Length: 568
Image 1 (cartoon, rainbow, N blue to C red):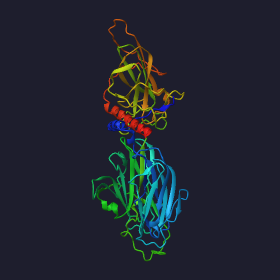
Image 2: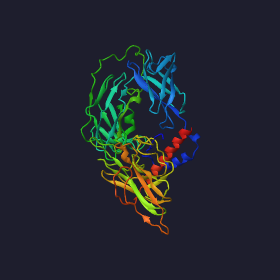
Image 3: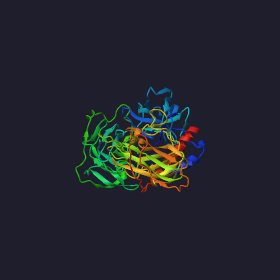
Image 4: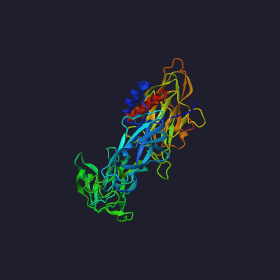
C-alpha cells in the first residue's frame, strides 16, 4: 500500500465547520482557479538632483483565492517603459529581464505563493524637471494561470526636490516566547537632495489590528514623545510619536542612541512593532494632533555616517527647477516605514535546553461478549519536559487531540462529550512528517474503521494524561480486532519518537452463552502496540465541544479542498 501522511486539523475557527460542509457538498468544478498576483508601489518619488538609484520591487506570486497552491509555470512580467522616457532612468536585473526598445520582458519561470521579486532601480534622468512624472506599466502572464483583475497595473514615478527620509525594510524575529525582551533599532537616512528643516518625527506603533501585535509593549516613557494619540480622523490608536530637533542632510544616516526595548507579554500574539519617519510638520504631525507628553528622559538620535561634503544649492540642470512638493515635505512616503515583525514560537516548541512535549498514545484492550456493552478508555500522555497546549493560536482549534479508530464489527453507543465522529478523515500531510501505510517507516496502517476526534480539554503538563471513554458493543465474535489510537499535534511540535504517538484499541468478543441475559463488561485496562499499561479509569468529559467542532470543521474543509484539487 502506498503510504500516506496524517493531516493536522489544528488552529481553525469553529466557523470553518459550516464552510467545510458547504465545500464538501459542492461539485469538483467549483474549485477556485489558480491566479497570478502582481504587486508594486503605486507611487514612487526620486530626487531631482540625486545621482543614486532608488530601488523598489515588483513581485509576482501564484495563489488560489489567497491560499497557498501549486506554482504557476512560465511566468512572464512585461514592463512598458515608454511613459518614463526623459523622466527617469531605469535599471533592471540582467539575469531576469531583457529590454527591447521601450519594453522589458522579465522571465521568472516557476512562481509559487511566496512570490518572485524583480528589483527595479530608478533615478531622475539627466535634464528632467523637478515636477516631472512618468508611469511604468505592468502585465503578467503564465502558461497555466490567469492574472488577477485587481493586480497593480502601474507605478507613477515623480521627480521632486526635497528631503527623502528612508528607513530599512521590516525585519522578522521568530521563535519568540512570552517574557522575552526584543530590541528595535530605529534608523533614518535622507536619500533626497535637500536637508530636513526643523527636525524629524518618528511614530512607533504596535497592534495595528485588534489581533495583531497584542501584548507587545514598547518600554519607556520618553520626554520628547506624546502618548495616547488622537487623530484628526478615526479613533485613538496605540503607540506614540516622538520629535527630534535634529536635521538630516542628504546622504546622512542617523539612528536612536539606544534601540527601543520591546517586552513580550504573557498574552502576546504574532504582530509587528512598526515605526515611520517624517519631517517635522509633515503628515504625521498633521494626523496625530494631540497626545499626552512623556515624563522620562528623551530619546536621542546619533549620526552613523560622516556628514557629506557641502555642495552648491544648484547644480547641472537644476537652476531652473522648482520644487514638486510643498516646501520641506518628504518627496516619497513609500519608503518611510520599517519595524520588527514578531513571530511567536509554535505551541509546544521546546525552549532552549528542553526536549519539549512528547505525546504518547494511551490505547486499551477490551474483552467482552457479543451484544454486551463494554467501556474503552483511550487518550494521550505527555512524557516530555514541557506542557502541550490544548488550544492553537486561533484560540478555538485544538493544538492536540486524539484520533480514535473504532474496529470493524464494533459500534459506539455512547462517547465522551469531547469526541466527535468524522466521516471525512484525511490521512495526508501530517506536519511532523508521520506516514501511515505498510512500509517499515510508517507508524501504523492506514485506518479503515470509523474515526472519532477527541479534543483535549486543558493543557497537558509533563507527566500527566487525558483520557476519553467510549461505550462500545461488539456485533459479532472478534479476535483482537484493532483500531488506531493516535495522539496528534497540530503544529508539528511533538517530533520526538513519533512511533509512540500511535497505540491501539483492541477488542475481543466471544459468543454470549446460551440463555445469557448479557452484562456490562469493564476492560482490564491496557495499551496497544508497545505502550505500557495505563490502568486509567474512565473519565467523564467536562466541556470541549467547541474545540472538537473546530477540529471536525477543519478536517471537512481540508478534505473538500483536496478532493476538489484532485478532481479538477
